[in-house]
Length: 214
Image 1 (cartoon, one colour):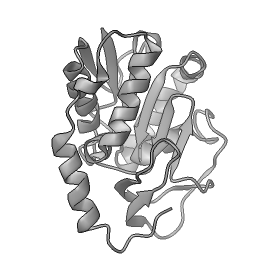
Image 2 (cartoon, helix red, strand yellow; image 1 turned 90 degrees about the vertical axis):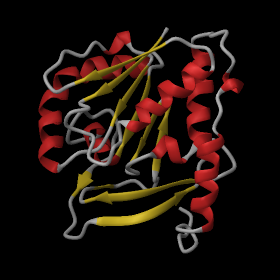
Image 3 (cartoon, rainbow, N blue to C red; image 1 turned 30 degrees about the vertical axis):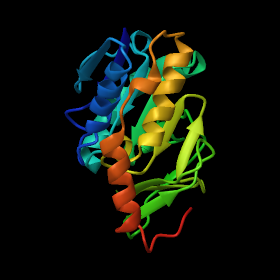
Image 4 (cartoon, rainbow, N blue to C red; image 1 turned 180 degrees about the horizontal axis):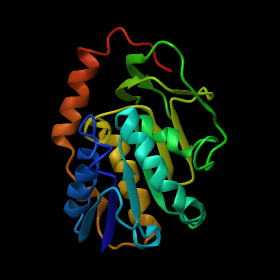
């Protein structure tokens, strides 16, 4: 059984980001895998070692501060989870939890300019030959050039909303790597991304015409 934890789903789901965890669970089940999706709320105890993959979404600045106060107690657990090859996907401003001013999992610093960043994005990645598409809306910013941070099995991006629903190749990449890491006999080719692929193609033809790739 693959276990997915959607942590702070009550605090960090500002743009419906928790739909990404549901998408992962749905497509993993298509491969023949049994899946448990746990929604872990603020104040619940989190045993990171129990889960194959962790998802954390975006929230208001006040909710992010609440999440930070709670997640700090798990700093060593998260570092150990990462060192053992655990998977984590963080979207929106939740990536600020992992920088120098918070968990210190990564060496970036978060600053808060006067103006918010609100824009569509088109992100190049070494993972596959197509871009990741999405939308950003955040006040904080990190002092790294990457629009998506890939480190081991951790994936962090300021992109919000339906990241995995809108980018089937990213979902497929995560699922294949996850199944491979646990020596699963399930067949990842059974996952059907027909609707997601149509959504991706439509986005390319319409709202991404004027976006420069990063």
